[in-house]
Image (tube, rainbow, N blue to C red):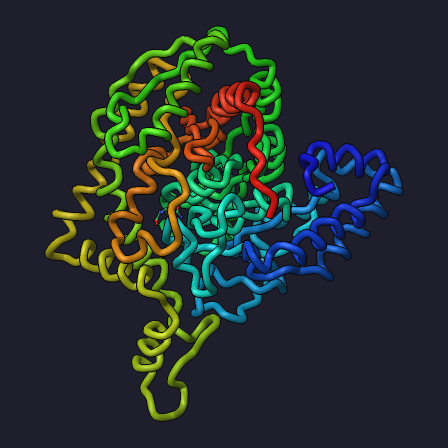
Length: 488
Ligand code: GLN
């Protein structure tokens, strides 16, 4: 049961060959069996999941058609508000907080009849590339428990690879869906910015944050994408436009025919800084796309290599403002409230104890970059670079349908090997960040193994052309197949 795809499970549940309760129990049992080793979950909502499963079973029995994912279990990154269910964003400062409402995305998951198993581990406030910055300890990569599962959404990706859930939700600000997907051999999509609602998503960098679907197959990812995407009047940057038919696009790509599709290789990502095994897997996959009929050309995007430094000014600037709300007054932790401290002291003690070192580093960088004397030199410059990168993308998509690159320069690294040098950690997102600055969609799909570990292939498309990336991703999958990790 746990190895089936979400599409298969949904069909079995809809035809009442199995109940959602049975499927949910199988996954809860799997979590009980392996999560002590993997630690993908921060909170498992066993009672809530079983109640939701029984309710779906009842509705299906009454003849309701709830859609293709009804009754299918799902894991949700702990950065989305879930009513009455603990939500921490991986931070001590939100320990014990139970939101009074559901994020729009969570509401849509419930309306589609999916069954939430629990909340997954993540780097604190989604800042990181390894899940080692979670205040609750790391998640371990099911492929090799001594290695990282990527980040910040390492829990959502590891839960898939460990067969603890067939579907999960991540959020991608600079790569946090795609990079964990790549290093765990799973699929993760960052939709077009504004294509999925941020209402109820704990903000990191509001102009970049994009929730999205994760699964073990491209079709499952597309099915989940279709459930969560679409306009939300409660999110001021939500796009009021039809969602492209990503499910049809994935099915078209699965036929393995890419005739008429133009694929662009980013010249600036020709391999410097990436592991040879990653580049070899990438090139093999590009050759396979050409064999499927795609026309492959090289495209120059001269500003892509400036994306990383621009991102590490813009994202910290926005987070320094967004995280000001965690002051010990409104939510979660409060320190020093003993009658001997002033309000300002309580706020600063709370923030000192509640935030981890990476979050503090970002707040300090962001505050500095936004300060009056440095605003133009840092934040202003970074915004100009962002415009140049957007122009690179716009020009590229006049020539090609999609751009491709490896998802991340290296396979899953050993736990502890990059935490002492923030810059080494930041490099994990070298190839994923340009897309976030532009706002278009991108997906990571497995392209094979290097030294026994999964490698991800990234496909980027134009704004609101999420369908194009799904078509090519499904074509890659039709050649590479899905990857199966060693037994835990
Ligand atoms: N790793 C990047 C960072 O640390 C991206 C994080 C994300 O996408 N949430 O900021």
